[in-house]
Image (cartoon, rainbow, N blue to C red; front, side, top):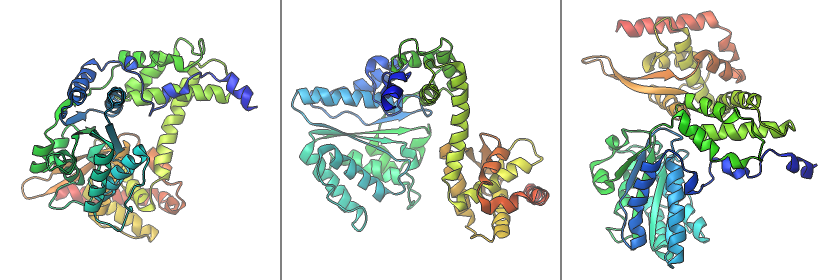
Length: 429
């Protein structure tokens, strides 16, 4: 049965449509300027010099990780041919909570790359000790190294003196060679979706990091089509209907030019054809795959949240849904009041307003909402405003799958009146 299924697959090289595959330079599309910049910045490594630090910024799915991954892979190979040891220490900061965890992740990544023991425990020793172990490993195994810190803006950690964790990490890594803690050449590449990322960096860290900027704009529909055409050979010849690639590109263009989503959808349509035993990928496979992606993404995100985060999201969505005011923006003071009412109805633990805001802000990293800071005028202070990227009622329905929230969901009129009263009170102040 396995042999038969393999023979019938629409794929011949599925890796080409996997999100983490490092592809050849020839397959990179619509990023000539960015590719040229990254190559020119990293070329000094091959000449025995230290390359500059870099800040790669732009929306998600615009090729930041793709290009730096492709270029550094080529540098590894070129250095090996010269008998030099070039290390690429690449981590994604999104799931990392603190500076201490980030440093441990760097140690673990280097240890895995060079095939040795981590040498420090994850907990129970100081961050300074972990830094020392990181530098020991690099000095022993690499002549030069680049740290690639993807989604660096999400490494906020526990702020001290209002300085985020990523500021401290950038400061330490970018000055490590100047302080002789790392003997070889060191470069740091920070990747972020936030164009204002540098505004929150401490002055010392900014001076030490001092990056060269590379901006990545959204892909347009034509570029997305070319990206997919360059991966057509992931599929068997004649396994794609003519309209499949244009349709996938059109869906992705609607998602703000995200190439990663285009490739995910391309692969998903092929998987759906395989599941059904179809020999050709059609428009119907693409449309059904898109529906499944949208459904699965929101379901998985909501299902993975803690109960407190579900309550926070539900209360915020309730304000957006039941508001009679123009737009669906939710002032955080109103969202928190409704959150308090929901927790009271559920007899659940009640977090502080700061924790509520923190939970809802975290959801912006998943693309469920967007956030902005607002002022209430002179002497009125600041507050966060949350705006849903999708339908807040649909989000509430997803959350109600958590049985604890079923009772609140049945009190539609009461919930609506609570929202209205809190919004009226907020706008009177």
